[in-house]
Figure (spheres, rainbow, N blue to C red):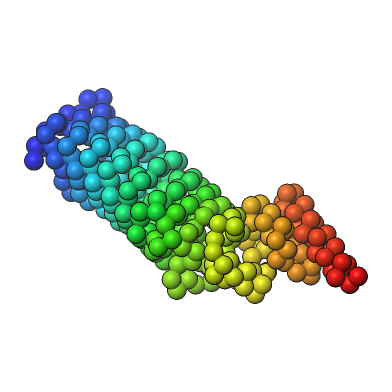
Length: 282
């Protein structure tokens, strides 16, 4: 491997002829603000840029197959990185705590997303292509800005807490429905995501979501109000899945929390429920 490189005014240029970036090669370098990696580099080994705390931008080449574990972990200023179509795997913790990354476009033929890959990152939206076989445990855990996630492959395995503690996550289509062995918190999360687009899911997943809602109305509405989850509440109001008694209780809570739009939707659901009861009595 040719290890020649040049740093000029914070810009790291790796020499042509390099075939991979070795483990920890640039780890902890505070003098790097941007990186240009040439075509021909097929692999980035683990921790190659970890803790480069001033790195803001990185250009990855077509032909790169793998982004190694913790490759950019702790790069707290990294705001821009492209992932080329050639990448097949993003390994454990690759973008862990990259707080300034807002957008990431995953390649159409990506096969695996490792555990903790984007944990604590600033990502706002993610679409996981159907080619991905597995999303590792905690891959998008505690992403405080994440509002939408789509997982397009019905056979994609969802790791434990792969979207856990991402409390702003209120929209998305999760084709697998629920992860295996989902606990109560995961059941709640994936049920609320179902609420944002129930028409895209099959009967089995829909029945599971409806059963959860019927048995946990308080938990569902507490989370909806806490996270101001308008998409879920809008669909619940349309589908008439909440009892009149619970609606009365949470109209007051929504008012006290100054959730104007949620209050209007709860009132709409209550009126629809009252109308349905009246029609039934007739």
